Image 1 (cartoon, rainbow, N blue to C red):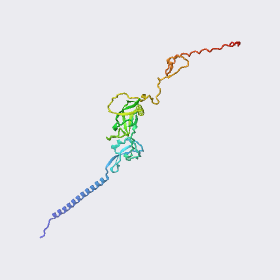
Image 2 (image 1 turned 120 degrees about the vertical axis):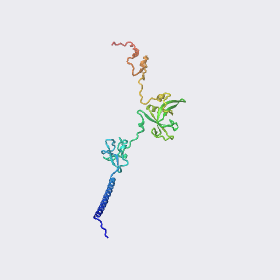
Image 3 (image 1 turned 180 degrees about the vertical axis):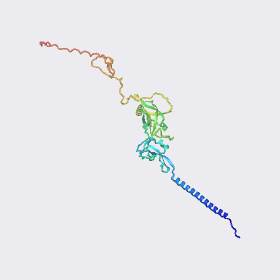
Image 4 (image 1 turned 30 degrees about the vertical axis):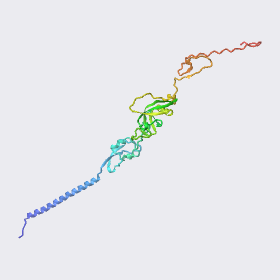
Amino acid sequence: MKLTFPARLKVNKTWAVLGAALAIGLLAALATRSFLSTQVAAIEARNQHQMVSVVVAKTELAQNTVLSNQNVAVRKIPLEYAHSGAVLPADFERIDGNSLAFQVKPGEMIMWSQMAGKRAPTFSARLAQGQRAITVVVDEINSISGMLEPGDLIDLMFTIDQNGRKMVVPLLQSMQVMATGQRSVDDPKSGERMQFATVTLDATPEQARNIILARETGKLTALLRNPADNYKPGDNYDLGSLFGTQPEGNPISASRTIPVLYGGSGAKYPSEALHLGRNLSSDIAFPPPPAAAPVPVPAPAAGVPTSSP
């Protein structure tokens, strides 16, 4: 017996196959779109770079040009193209006002290696106006057993032998030690006892002259003192007056006068007239010199006539 199906059943089967095909096609389209979107994102990601800001030259900068906000700018460049020695905007204040050691073209990065090095200040720049630095060997100024440090204050005592007797006087007080050997005030302290052969002191020209005189005529001894100690037991000695020496170039005092000697006439003069001073009064009366004795005229011989004038 043969079974027969109605026509409606055949139509529903056709629509089912068609719907399944459409669904498969839709899923394929969605999968393709998702795949393409992923590929496009990957390509765009490969083309994108991480950016970093660096300092560049606005215009061509010649050698020894001083850098400032007027001749540099900030530019973003890919990180892989930025040099490791490039100056970043956050570090620009460290080079602001410094000069270039090499020429830089417009748009080029400013490099740390292109900066001209600053010259270290000389030792003489640490001296104040009017001060002098004098160096003395430790054979003449002792080193307090090597414990003397730059920046310490010392008193200088002067010892001299006068007629077999030792005389000790305070020469200079509160003298600042600028250096011991080649170690200055700003050198780091190692904590070890330093060996040095010289001591450099901060002195005025007059104090330096006294140290030189003391070094040549006697012995100097250093006494270490507390920096807060303001006590001065006595005045400093001026060795120039102690030894009767005059500094070179000192003029003769105006109060000194030149003695004038008078003689041969036996005349008496006032005491004011015995010295020629700068302010000698012009109205001092000098007594006239004594009159000369008359010369006797011999009498004419007998028989010789005399002539009248």
